[in-house]
Image 1 (spheres, rainbow, N blue to C red):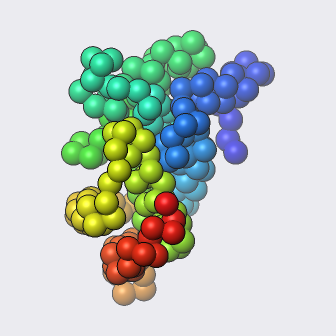
Image 2 (image 1 turned 90 degrees about the horizontal axis):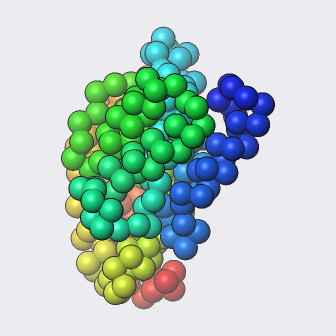
Length: 222
């Protein structure tokens, strides 16, 4: 795992700062999720660099670690328009404490904001983080299903009320199809030998399999 160079114990301070801004009570948007996205962005960066696509690895790593910071908090009560905006405030505060260069911090914050559902994503770093946050949609079905269940539990926890499986299926279908309309291509790894989007194909397969599951089977996962 790449480290942010500076003082010898900076890596330990960084991980401590990151873990502190996530709540272990959240089933999905927690510290483990941040570390998973960190891993994914660096894997995507490796593929990009192998094909000559420039990536600022420090920016994407820090953005990945802080992209859902404070997700458990009420962003409106904190004076923010979105959870992504709240994450940038938290990230700035922590990165300043860690003496990260101001120009790096600004790019990290822009990259985090680009993960908002309706945000534009133009830089390579923004595309990498957004792609990393979505890549599990096209992973193994077991991973897709696990994440879907965890997200349902999390929203129920944050709302304080239950969501029916029919409602959750409809919501998941709308959201996945929206993200499919924003397919992100960075390297040739994205396409199969016929030029078709591997991400599209695998994600649609996972979605259809999930939508076809009977409620009785889904209830066993609650």
